[in-house]
Image (cartoon, rainbow, N blue to C red):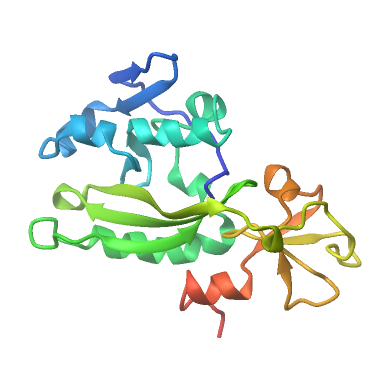
Length: 233
């Protein structure tokens, strides 16, 4: 999933939300999801260190915990997240087009789980790096009552500063094709070196702001490692 792509598709209101001492938004939930999550300890979910959200069958967001907003604030996503991406927004808007088929199959499998007998979540590993920090994350997907929703838990497994060997500190030449397009991986955000399409480089400035003409796909490593089975025959 694209952890820096935000969009807004507003739906009815927020029966409950709180704010921390700095005024940043904290956990938010709709009436419907208060019922769906009745068997969970909401206080524990609200304070969980991971980013936790819940969606209905249309993938409309009905619950967001403190960690969701805290991660956004720590990585430059606020106030955009609180203002433009909250309850009622569609999770699909955060999934780049090249990955939507994979996640459609993954969520379909999750909705088919019986929460009374399937105690372990479906897991998906992905990369969610910032210009300063390299991160590997895990998405845990739990089915809610009668398949009416999913609980999604995003956890950071590995986090460390980028090494100097991994960084291209200044965007150089050779990253655009003859049409002026730059190809960027939707998962790791590296960009393809056009003079040798086997090379994909990490350019911090282009994580903050992509070049004006950017097309998104998947680099070969991310395609095979994070999204197995997604290659076209």
